[in-house]
Image 1: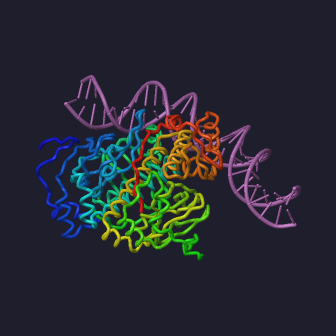
Image 2 (image 1 turned 45 degrees about the vertical axis):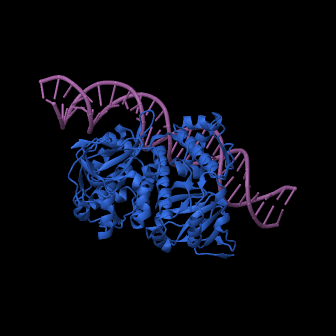
Image 3 (image 1 turned 90 degrees about the vertical axis):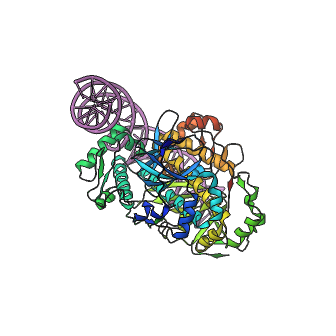
Length: 255
Length: 255
DNA sequence: CGTGTTGTTGAGTTCCTTCAAATCTTGTGG
DNA sequence: CCACAAGATTTGAAGGAACTCAACAACACG
């Protein structure tokens, strides 16, 4: 094991794409044999991160693209005065650092929220890949469009919902996403360590007010969110409270 | 002239891509001769919209993709109770409806903020285009990634800034964007009709508070925003007030 | 068994919203 | 060209949502 420039430990075990763990994920569309071969050729290795480690650092020059193999990550932006805004989350199958394929400097950091493992691709071969394998390029565009839709949701949440609605919205979003990607069982409980300070930074609320909002939702029986786990006993009720529309996301491709 | 299903008037004048008005825009990378031919083959026509008309309607099934040729548009989302959140803006060269290339139902509406003209592409040929012309597909991914970065900014603004900072942020964003795309001269003044109600819906603020914030910025000499025009006399000062980082966007490709 | 991190609670203040009404603009028809 | 209606902006006042400051309790880790 050796440490690479970006932190995290790359390790010799390189899962062949044929036995990619993501193939077992119900919400993901497994690529066909041909695509798999292309992906395998593009891939340079794998890296593991422990909870709290950073995959990308704001302001750095990006040299890689990643796909999440296991674990959950968050993407955030730091302001000069130290304030932090969490932009969104990455679950297995999500692509990390697509913007960095185009920009010299990255505008955000990415940190592991749980222990995580990622698949590594070289940034400088991305253009060639896109030219020679249009099908993969198409799937990447698909992923980018979907990511955009998620950010759209986040904007609506921040712009139109009050504190308790935001907390409920985020809980439902995370638990749903986790169930879709196999990170959580289908029982509405996501076991993951998130501090209230992090929740506050996702939702644009103060820590104290976040705490009180979480308590209110717990008393109401809608969301029981502790540092260890998020539990949403009745997804429909919580969704309703947060004014979310039920959506069945179509299966997504992955790289 | 005849009206098509989505509103707007398509008209017989079809600008050949060779003389595309976007070529004159400083912030846009004109495609080369080969690409231009592909684009021209993909294009089905042009449509004009007057201020207030809708290009896409939330919940409808999408059949087309558009590129803005002239004018400014906004993309927004309606909640069940009538609240509205404006997601972002489209300036010349921006692609409209990329998500609709993948999703059956669109999650937002798009409306013309000024009289506008768009270039129309058929959605059902998008996949074929991506397969046969990887270079165009790559550029579209580029655009999607850039759009994502803009939404990221919006999230930071809503999550971390107070009312006056948000108004200043939006003013700078719009004026800068307008100057980059040739919609406004390089004098920091964007002549465009935007009501305070619209501004409120972009920023997640009440109309009354939006009004008071705008007045405060006017008194401070930072932003003079009337229904007819946005004036930012000193971009650097306004940017500083809104805690924005100065950025020189690289030229963007367009379709 | 300390020490640092995270969560909880109380009190006071600020920011933002809501409601309501008045003024100003703009467009339209007579 | 004026009168009028509809839409947009402005102002005041009061209430509520969210923030800050500050202290303490619970927990996790070496």
